[in-house]
Image (cartoon, rainbow, N blue to C red; front, side, top):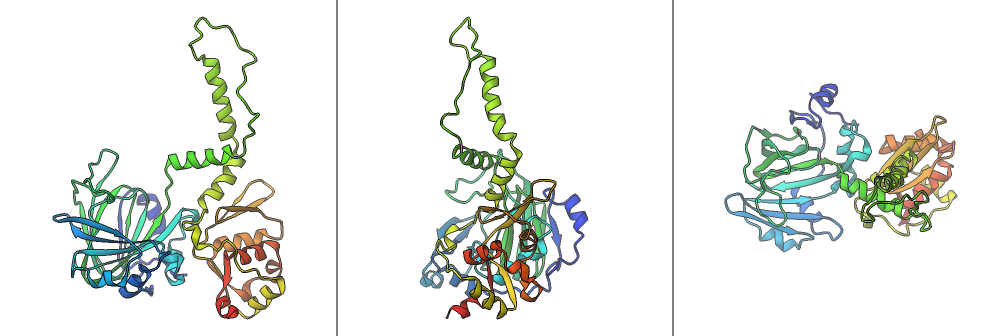
Length: 389
């Protein structure tokens, strides 16, 4: 597993994480970045890939187009001032997914995806801020980054239909990133990157930060699906009121008790949150009816393979919910209460994106959980496609 060089993790978590930007020179200088500009352009032509092209500048304005794109689009682009952005490249290319490994000091359930961008000379998306943490890793060429002010709901934006551009960007720091350099930008810190030359590629490692509205809304939606319609407001201790138009404090307290009963159920919140934070970013990438292998076929495939992999588009997490070590595994929005013989496997899969098959104990391969995840495509072996041919 690759690690970040010239980086003090304890100092970063104490003094920089969600507080202030940090430039890490040569942090991933030894990482082999797998993509070239033509590769990224090819991905942007695929139907299942989310992509955008942004053309322009702050002086002339910006134009945004959404993919998938026809190859002719790239032939007609100007020589400068345009950017191609492709989301979730790690879901499609395992070598890009490996870029997440050096950042595993952040919990897996916080990871969103790796966006890859190509910028021509001067290409940029304008001065903006994000509501989540991001590590900007320079993969090819150079990019000039300006860091601006901390933004909030009072920050005035330019009236662009889709791009949230800052009207009054105030540059406070400026760096030119070389291949392997990393720039960490906390949430709501303004930043603005411009490509230098015609070979600039940046890998953006982004993290999930659900809004309070999303958290409350998703939790309430799940609870609504479980509530019996016979559960109703009652007031058997109703007292006579001087004015029938008043909503009494007693009624408000009773409603508060109803609501509190749900939010005080820690086990229900735990189970819901595990499913919520492992929901796949792109459910359409997961086969509704994946190919099913019987136990003998799985054993043969494992015997012929060197590695077992976690699907890059799948999300894994677990919780231990009691003192007896009861473990629940969450994968792609589903949950499993693990049997005693499955706990070791669940933890192993959550901690590793790939496992040498020789290091995988036979008893774990025989568990119900292993076969279920394998047949759902959440885990796979390196030559399964060759085996199917």
